[in-house]
Amino acid sequence: MTNRYRVSLAGLIAVVLLVSAAASAQSKQGWTKKLPDGQPDIQGFWSSSTTTPLERPVNCGTKEFWTEEEIKNNVRTCPAPAGAPQRGAAAPGGGRGGRGGQRATGEVDPHYDLAQFGLNLRTTAVNNRTSLIIGPEGRIPALSQVGEKRQAELAAMPRTNFDSAENRPLTERCIIWTAQGPPLMSPGYNSNLQIVQGEDYVMIMPEMMQDARLVPLKPRGKLPENIRLWAGDSQGRWEGDTLVVETNQFNGRNPFQRVGSDKMKLTERFRRLDEKTLLYEFTIDDPVWTKPWTVQVPWAKSEGPMFEYACHEGNNGMYNILSGARAAEKKAAEAATQK
Image 1 (tube, helix red, strand yellow):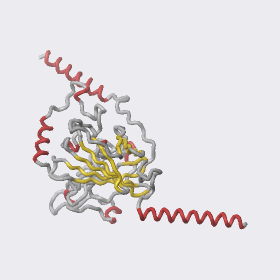
Image 2 (cartoon, rainbow, N blue to C red; image 1 turned 30 degrees about the vertical axis):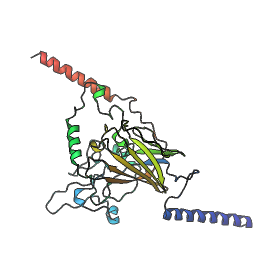
Image 3 (cartoon, one colour; image 1 turned 90 degrees about the horizontal axis):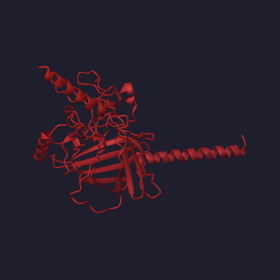
Image 4 (tube, one colour; image 1 turned 120 degrees about the vertical axis):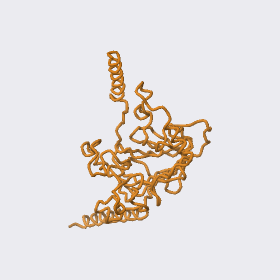
């Protein structure tokens, strides 16, 4: 072995050791990488997919976390009280439960077979929480009197009908998707997001509905009270390595959890934990609930680019729904004339 080769090999080993040491230090200290303008680097593609339910199963009481042993053995249910049926188990299909998940009877819900379409291979961050809602209750607080009144008012509103496209639900009309928020919820599939940082703005774009949300970082004046927006009015700032975004002035027409009001105040926090994980946290403060409540969910680093979610392109659903309604009306009218 030549002296030159020995020197080169020694140099290579030294570089590897330095990189390893830096990675180890990074892991212990948390994410410290900064962009050229000094902002913590939280940009990139992320997956909000989760197997943790929003609310904690009732049987789990105040149990906030699964133990390492329970995770190893894939235990995601708490025992029911003696003599009581097993209820409120966490659905393995995702935070929303239902589709593709396992019913209380043990049979798989055939409505949406995740494995059939490869959706069981989604990028998901590890999470040992029993619910995304943090705290001892782990559940959405009770409705206040204001909330009960609003719930009754919403229930009394005319239901969507099949008269025209304008009378179909918002998501069906590609106006806004419930999960796109804010706050950002995992929709169950197409759970990707992209964050792009600039000196004065942070752009957050979910895969569904692909509305680019621009969050200003420099303080600006408050909008007039009479201006209400689908996604509210957001203002961001950095608190150390955490991006804090406060949003208000929602229009209340896409009610969060089907009851949220235009008085809702939302505080979101984005903090990168390491190379592959970003912690997303949000707090809901709305008079429809008896107290504020907080959700915490890790996002996993995913590969880009995101594909276009062309909601209307090739959408035969709306046409089929309305033409089916016209056909049903015609059939009913013909039957009436034959009587």
